[in-house]
Image (tube, rainbow, N blue to C red; front, side):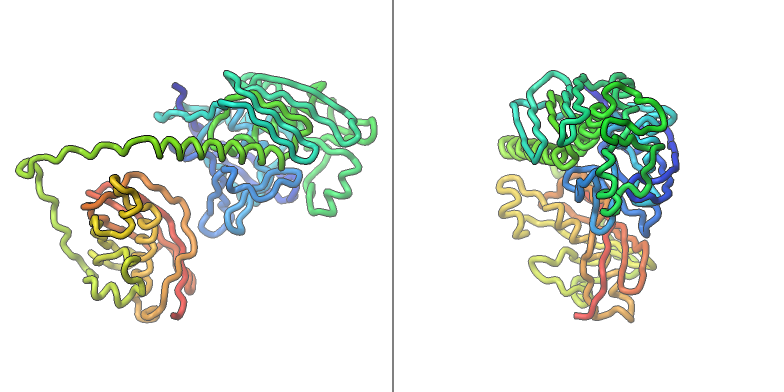
Length: 452
């Protein structure tokens, strides 16, 4: 059984972005099990994070870009190939610009960073997607065939539209083979593409220090080619990085002809859809977990009463601040409120209308309604000031959302919120939901106050 892995300590590197040309500092930070790979823009307000997931891919023109709202990270594929190749599951990539430093155009420097940081196992199982049936994809000039295999193997043929510099390479991917045979392969382009790339605002940081240029039959480079098949090996590096957006290691044989980032991401979307179908089917055919046997009431200690504290509010007072009404009012009373902190209560009963369909015979409070409860309680905290009384709090966004345990009928959901930032009409808050003092969900929320 394979374990998830992260790094032992931070590692940093600085340089310029290939396409943006921006100076950028980058630091790898360890991350807990299940966190995945996250890119963190430390130069922006609130240091927003973007998960390296296929659903966050927004552009695939000459590189792979992920985004969340209007926040973007360009050219993530070389970094992701490093994490995939060396078996790093959980890590935070801190950036002070919108693109990682390109280094020498390969993944060699990133591999050095990982080795300097050290790889450590974690106490969590690594989920792997093993291909069970053949699939194929054609997109433009790109063609892919994926067939079941007992390990990850990539077979690739690359060439330009004129068939120049056609190269073929095939390799079983292991940490050792990736580092020796793939990691040092540099990015490349054809000379006649350069004008188009510049006109489209790309390769602003490109040079022979970080790319190989092919001009007719000549190869322009500041050093000899590192491999005889350096171009197709770099294509394999890109495939592995884009495939890592699946969110878990892939086991199967990928045969790719003239791959591109757009096609790499399309095949990854297809695999993600297959993975989702398996998850839905598993949920549909798995019987609900048995409910714990009721204990003798004489043997169960009564829970401590939730006594009101400073700033407590009854439901009548809560309804003066919140416009929500049945069935969407997620706060029964405020337990305490002082300064930038507030605690409130939601009694979860079987009479909640959402339990009719979520799920019959196995009622669970939807996670999004716990998120709504956090937002409503955060709204109360801002609306209770004199200058904001009578306004309406609009829920704008949620980040770092985690649902940890199911909430069932009979639970008392305690919602604790801390207001972390206020700028004009915009507020940011950190909230957690608890049952019996255990965290069941958490999120960072942003909302706006407007006149009704």
